[in-house]
Length: 460
Ligand code: CO
Image (cartoon, rainbow, N blue to C red; front, side, top):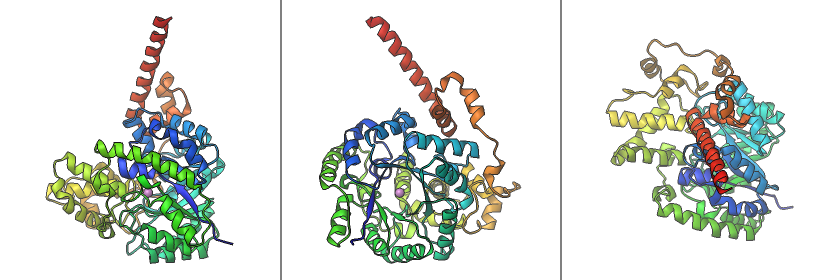
């Protein structure tokens, strides 16, 4: 029987995040939800990552309500979210009570699959979220943040996968956020993992370097079960390769692909129009759509590339782009080869820009890099350069053990502080994740409700 390959559609989350900085509002994709639901995807990635933050920050949307509305229109397809382990959706570690309640509420509001990763691949940062996911009855997808460095060997990845299985992972995801995994590497790594555990494997990559189609094909030959793709108008460049193209090629090669072509055509037609709007207003930049082989040297993930560009644009220093890009792998080496994924990608990227614009390395250091050097993000893959660490930390002492163990619970305090402003536990969670944004959102919501009331009275 033909081997079956399943697809995760990323247009609502990763493609949206990588190409248009997550600016897709709910009403722009709402008309397609029923079609996506009927297309036959293994899952639709639609929440987590930057979606939560951007909903509150730019779109004036309640991220929880967005999730419930997607769920209501998509009863048949698994909804997937991306969760940054102990960072949840933020950029630093949270106490365990928050992680547990967040996971429970995400599942209660409609999430079926939680892809859980840690920027440093420190399994101590995945444990609580993994266990909470299993407890809530959802699929815990234990994730490797894929990168290359002298310390990122297949042996270490296989060891990690076994630990993820112990923690309750029902699928394994290899997350190549920078699109740097080549076809042979995919074949070898997937083979090694398949030999070690009997779990379905999902490969996630980006088209950034142009390797993705070849990489998926070789991964599938090695036995990968699930691939992540984006409907064509939101595919390519810093996003995923096109769903329709892979479905076509895989069928031709004799694989079983259970996707409904009519639905794919309808989705492509619709999202073409959406894409054109974002191209017209400048949100979708040509650079994000292009193939960039520099990533094979710099290992800069899609999201980071567009962040680096907009950061330099704001500082009127777009001409320093190449220098900042060249500085990035040097900062990464100094920091003990962290994979470049949120939040380490931002931390390393911002530091690289600082080092270039200051004209002196580590003259200014963000509080995040400082915390990283103290050990607040967990164990680094290789030791941080001792001289640079000493320069950054001065007299400060690094943390011993798991950082989250030193954090006091936050949920009860936040609940008490918000009082009437919070209408639900979900509000409390939004507030803990993004206090200023959430508070502003709640106040706007309250004002809107009061205005609505007045309006009704006047009308009556
Ligand atoms: Co991605």
